[in-house]
Length: 277
Length: 277
DNA sequence: TATAATAATGACTAATTAGTCATTTGTCAA
DNA sequence: TTGACAAATGACTAATTAGTCATTATTATA
Image (cartoon, rainbow over all chains, first blue to last red; front, side, top):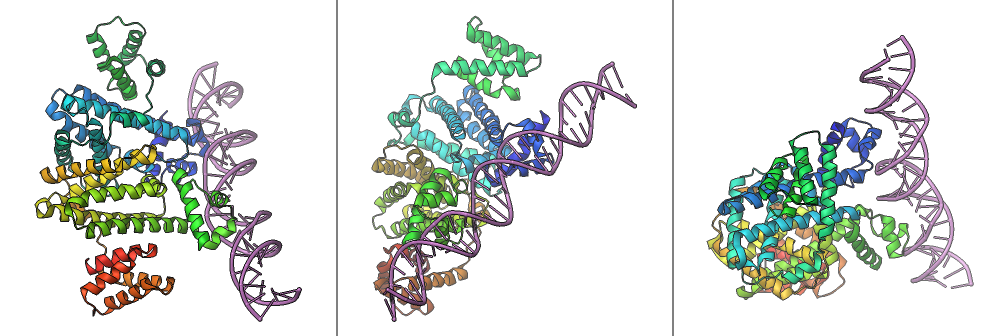
């Protein structure tokens, strides 16, 4: 298991520099100081490694932001904290962020594209719920434009410090983007992205499937974890999904128990969506 | 010469779908219906093909926008036309635009990165001069933020119709972005991107080299062209650079003569920068 | 028609790739 | 010390790659 982590870390460095395709398994194993065979003991293929990297970072990233958006009490501070922690995460995991910017939609592997679209849509949902919390009904007809403007800010300003090693004043950056976002939110009158337009390319993720998917991931995590508060909480939460008996306060508390465990970030996010808090 | 064009067109289609690295020369030649040897009669290498594609589109693209920004009389209309023609070009050359979005900074080849940075900086200069024309001195301390917001809009909104085949209402899109841009321009108070920050990563393109470069490209184009108004204009403009004798009106007229010739777009842009109109 | 010049071919090389598997090495308990 | 098991190795395969070059086909000219 520790070997797997080593490979993921070292591969990430190479991928960030050269991209997925230009980096060979040979290079990765050399960079790790292990043999080629050892690589295939940890991963079935190069593609599996890439998929695990994408999952690892995207789940963490999305769920962190989601938690913030759903739990920050102070609405005044929310937008600031959103930008701050987004760029903080980018900065912290800059190798993965670079891949995200470079690789994006690319690569022949259909599976990657589907995965990335899924996470991209999850992220859009999170931003949407933030926008709705912040500005309410008054921006209902311009909210999709606002989301795309926010995404545009994130992309363009990330490039600045990801690809040129510039000193980064996170506080100023967040403040500056908060001002821009508020300006747009309060004064846009001509929306371009309508509800219909969104529906044209956002194939809905169907709900029933999602329940089964949550239960499946929970089973997997329950098996992985040793005896702990986290494991017990997961088991109780699973029962709650199968037949609801517990009070909201208890469910909320159980979710709180698992949310900081590094392996439970994603299930944490899925449960927040499922229980609607 | 016609063969070269065929290869460029067909290669572009494949590159847009699969990216540079995932597309083999074999695939390209098959898609063209020619032999592998024939490919190497037109291009020294696969990299040369890629570089020519980048040059072909980026020169055309940059110089078209530059002409618009420098020559549109009606300042009210300028921003609208900027967005309209930008997205119109993207739409027209969507295969190349896709590559631009996907490939971006990527690829191991240092030469590509340098080329793309050069064109990116040229584009930033064009946008800067537009912003200065539109809003004057009052936005001098926020103008770089404005440039990056405009670039963000361009990127994010392009994705919508490049990667999902959506119907595109260019008029509405341009109007919508004009409103957003004006809002930001008139109300931003907290800039993030300062003059100093810009200088940290924009290595200046030195001026003396640029004069020699212009003359070199002119010589090349003069050789390429058959006897025509364009050729004569180029010869006169070259003499003007070597020793200025002609009146501004004549110089302007000579530039006008060449600006619409597809092979002269870039030299046209360089001359506008050199003569400062 | 005959000759020269140019264009086009595709089998070839050498390098690199992802992935496999017989073999070796290391680590335990008995 | 032995024997059993797991961990790790790297030479190997089969496929693919960019680029070459002797050969053939086509065209233009005399």
